[in-house]
Length: 334
Image (cartoon, rainbow, N blue to C red; front, side):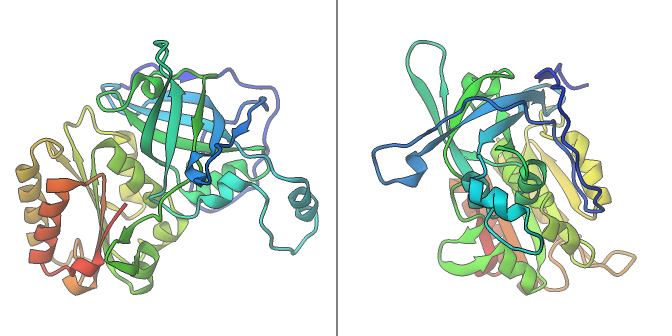
């Protein structure tokens, strides 16, 4: 079973949620308001503006406890004008929550800063993918002065300042950065564009960071609806079943229409991962119900999204999917 999880003590106040038929998985309640500050740098670089946030939970996200689910509350107070407009029915407006409104699509990330605890100053992580979709961030935090956000961190690759953070600890994050999943050579290519063209989607998540970016897609309402009529397949490259992140959610994702294919040993043994993926592509014929799998009816109408894949891994995946007929224009990265 999962390792013991740490949680902040429940507060007395309750947040009443409206009934909804949309698919979502709730996260724990945000703690009562704290004195948090946005610290602006003297430079013009918006990524250098730091938003303080409080750690709410640090839960085991894998059987062996090496993967952690870090839930934080980012200070994001709604301004007075937005609060006034909220009381006026029928109006569409920016709710004044700067951090939340900057988070627009799956695949975005933040920079994170934290105290190292060794007297050596702050530690910084340059790219920490946001693991929850824009839908969940808005739904859980729409009427609060903070945004609840979840990150996935790995004890083997991330610093202890994140993996061992305790409820109540304060860290800092930048605003959401990046453009989601894009193609550096073809700016018009994106996840949204692929869905408008009714493409089959193949998502490749390598390691914890890759799964964090892909998880933000799987929870995104437009993609959830997309699975009703289009194949969406996830290849998850992990070291082992015990160290796989969010293993308890895999069956739930399958019930929602996703095809989840774990490739164990795929993080370190790249060649074996390529072989396993290729075998799945070769057997991706029509299912008994007539619904295409993996590459869809035609590889030309398939988009591949790579998350956490760099260097040699990305190059080999690009070659593999290109050899199966997927256009390089339709291969996107986070």
